[in-house]
Image 1 (tube, rainbow, N blue to C red):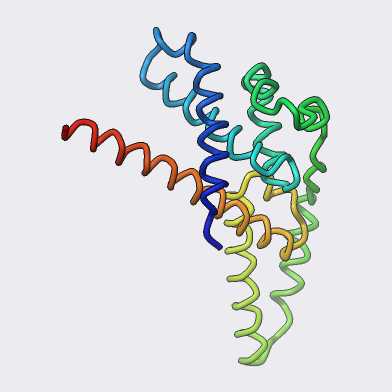
Image 2 (image 1 turned 180 degrees about the vertical axis):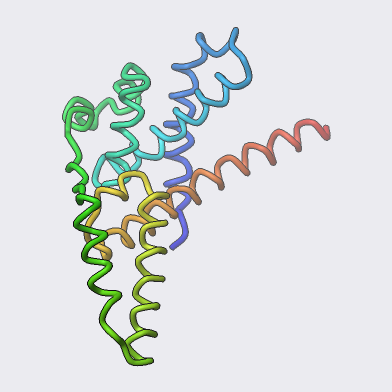
Length: 180
């Protein structure tokens, strides 16, 4: 799945709008604050492309709304910003540590054949990798369904590719301007 040129154009428009909103506050700030503003506006632009239809976009909107509510409202104009900002994500389920430890001990006690051990090892590997995905994708820790997690991950990757393509084209244009 490659991002389309219309996605690139839409992202660029929304990102520019976010940077223009931040412009007055960026001029007299440190490099760290500028980087934070650029990242924040890029995140909101990327999430607004999906209009809150994916878990990762809602998670990014919720995260950025707590940091800069004005920016989010401005960039999400026309997408029912209030409903997206105020929409709560499902709570993460928490297991008690003692219960988890006890169940793992019980599973270890049972003797297993070689094929069962290989299957268990593969299952642990998949579980570890899935947990890694949950940590990387915004809102991933709230998804209990692995299929949904993979779909969201693919969609998030396409959005990140869009962001990278736009940033590359900006850098290429700036380098071409410098060479003149």
